[in-house]
Image (cartoon, rainbow, N blue to C red; front, top):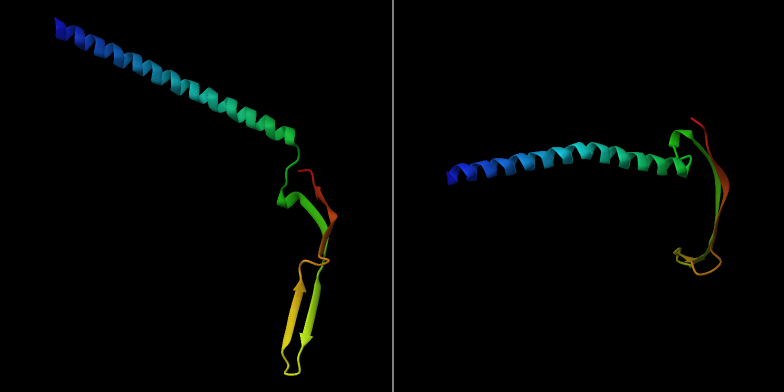
Length: 100
């Protein structure tokens, strides 16, 4: 009689574990939908995104470096670029995202 009871409780545990696994699988679908909805909501709040095919850019970049070249009588040239001096980089222009 003891072995019959032992088998019955093992079967009960297996059935209970099966219900728990089935519940987790069913909840997984809804959890995935919820996280995708939250991601879409956050993306919609950001606004228009960069799309290479729908973006028009027009920029002009200017760089100013101090460069010194010294030429010796033997024909060798020594070029020095002063990076610590009056180096400037400016970028002017605009970028437009076209509607789809």
